[in-house]
Length: 280
Length: 316
Image (cartoon, rainbow over all chains, first blue to last red):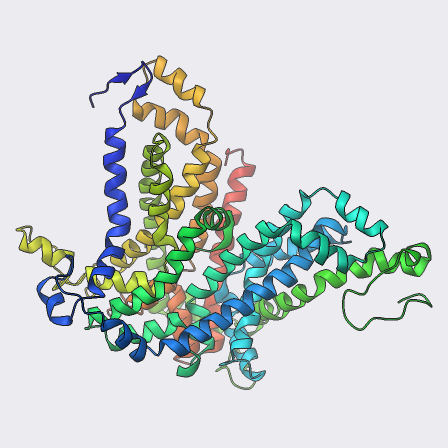
């Protein structure tokens, strides 16, 4: 490879840019094609399956919304996301506070327990959990699935929140305690406002994980009116796999909110996800 | 539980006044009870959902149990069946091994390469990083459906290439036993490698730039820089991710299930899809528990091997 130097230091970066752009096309090309196909009609996809659209059939979106029953599935997914995120933040935040600040007796054991618990694969406890949940009437029940999501996501939340809380100087809390605040007041009035960045990061990672989750949602929600956006899309594509325009329109409606949120808060997303939020 | 002036509060965590800290009861209350009241709710949920069922999986794996009523205790029969009889299990296990060898090589090669390219770029580097990360935030059902179409023999990339005069790639990648598993791995990797790349990239930013300058003065080639500075510089990250990817490789479910459900003719069956089928389609919950336990055992085996090598003095 021919190399030349600018000011004696910089190696020409042209090959780097070319290779990175190729990889970006590989990563984003398929997403762009979905965008293209979401506004084509079925016939023009047959003629031109990968290129940009020549006509715009916006009708695909309301049609996919109707057939995919998006109003119900979006509601279900949002209930799961909001329920899980608030519970994980509240309960996980409390545990993190106890570990970081209250010198929880046996805290080391609790951390070890959470570490072991978080490394157990879902497939290990899935089968007994399903039949336990069925006996408790929690299968086909959004609340039942929220409990499972909270349990699965809380170790990550506790670890991340704890490491953030450890770094907050204790002066504020001590001052509040001298003023007679109890631990609950210290937690809600002092700690939460100071540590919102960590809570936001955890909320985003857990929210994304729940919104995208497939295995548990498939197993625990089998009735059509409880399908999430993801499990409903899975059924939708099995029924309409031939209709690439409708499935693309549904896909665009599903990923648009994720992409907007991700692009707005991408630093926080990437920081949270690379700290071990989700499995590959 | 509380001193005379401090009534028992119904819900955690109850307020504690300074006075309580002075009496022995109050001090104990403050020191032990309050912290545990904070940690208890999440701990209880975790025990009920994760640890309890995990432990009962060990018992159920020794039973013939359909999921309803009590199982019949049959000792190690399920494990005998796994080891000596069940050809589906054997094939799924070998597919998991193939999956493992794919994911320990391809994503690592691509993302190390891309990260080392991107690490030198200043202008636009945030844009590239974000763009390459996007596939990782998409749900598996979307990724799978995109690629099911792109890999289609009539509408996909293969058909386009064949129109352009490059024949031979317009085959049903997901519909043929020879290519199904590899195609699924390719799709999963499309979604996954950007995540790995970003991890490596941020690790590379911790390498002191003086090392590269010194190497350049010594006339090192790019490959030599990569080999002797970049890779050693981020080795802890690489090794940790190798460990995590190895563990995940035995647990894969989503992409296989969504794209082929283990087919055609079982050619892409993995242990994760086998558990699902045994438990929820064949109602062999006891046998499914045993398979799930072997998956955890394999993941545990990987961790033990890692710790063993580290104890033997491997710098990993």
